[in-house]
Amino acid sequence: MERLSLFNSPLFLGFDHFERLVDTLAKGQEDSYPPYNIEQVGECGFRITLALAGFRKENVNISLEDNQLTIRGRQEPDPNAVYIYRGIATRQFIRSFVLADGVEVKNAEFDNGLLHINLFRVRNEKSVRNIEIDSIPEHPKKTPLLESK
Image (cartoon, rainbow, N blue to C red; front, side, top):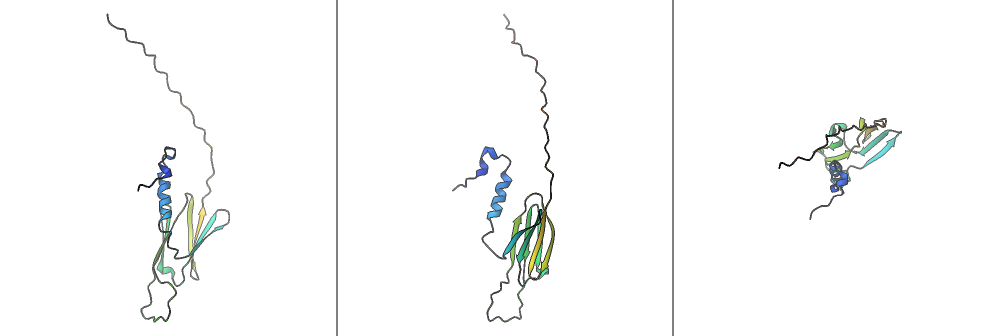
């Protein structure tokens, strides 16, 4: 069955990157590990906080490619540990966030099992620009060809 898309409309020419963005957001959101919060900090700031119990900062990698922020974690289990009950996850994870244009990563902090990624929105001053309308030189009038007799 072919998938219909709102972005196939001729009214949305040049917006195909939004369709890819929606597809990216829809993928991979089934897994809720690790849990996270997104909060607004101040007028232009945001903070993503991931709960990473048992991880050390050496086990976590943060990368930014284009507008996609990706956090990867890999935890090695202790080979000498003998568990009677194991309820704390020790698995690897990948969590991605798509950042809006103008949102940049300020820094990342790891504190008491919580990874904080601080973001800020770059303030772009909105500007209005008038577009000049150029005149097209008039073409000489075409005269009908004289028919030869």
